[in-house]
Length: 155
Image 1 (cartoon, rainbow, N blue to C red):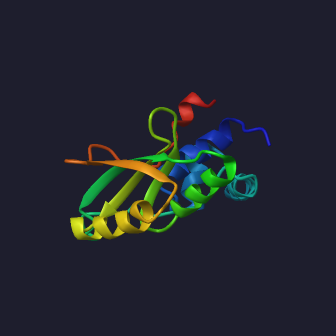
Image 2: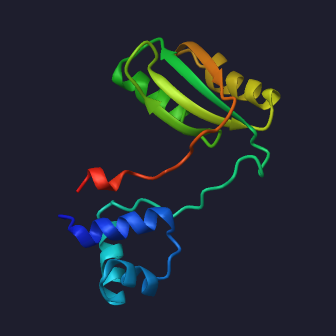
């Protein structure tokens, strides 16, 4: 699928508010409602739109501590890495990246308290024989959190 300026405009609008009514979205991008609806379905079918989600306030949900965790694997063979990736894909991990540098993984965790973080450490790191070491960084303030993709640099 090749994207045109209308597709980029639709994606730009949807990533800031995926609940925009089709009629309004059509007016914003200067297309008919039916055309916008077809394009959105095509964007979903081709994997450009992976999900429509709500961005929640972690503080209001008592997930008040953001912790970044660097993890170095003991073994980095493909099978070992796949097992680690799988173990880091559970609900306690908000984000996980396989990275370059001294560490192999960077995880983002949201927790209500340090006791919960200790439980997660025991489950994900201490009891995992392939975790060589892990280092934590506690965020003092959330300066920016978004899921937006910079579309202007794509087109």
